[in-house]
Image (cartoon, rainbow, N blue to C red; front, side):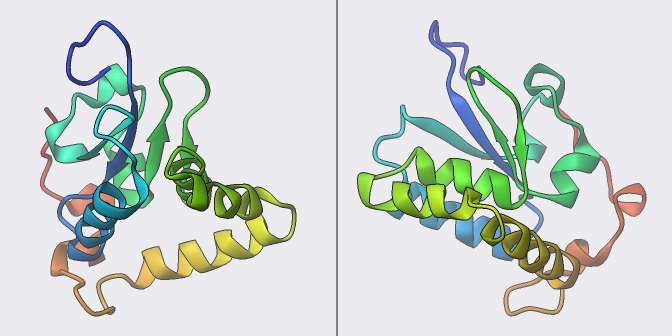
Length: 139
């Protein structure tokens, strides 16, 4: 999907301008993903978003899970999909995160963190800008 390989890969798309997002993406690469070929972890600034079927604004607003087949998941649902596609011991957390009630609570927490990420440790000034005021980095 991203690399031009014959078999499409799922892609976890994050905001590369955000230090918190970048740190968590590295954690996914090292601790959650089993092998590099399982799924791609990449900042939206380095991707052809039109090929993935997501917009720059969506990627700035929330984490995106673009599966090799199926519907795109955003925010807490992207986290759940990432966990569900990681090491075996992470998969139950992905299922739990999809459970009614827990998913809604996770959504509230996700939106709060996303709205305040510029205030959190590791946050950058770019994190506080609305999508319309961000410099465009589209590939």
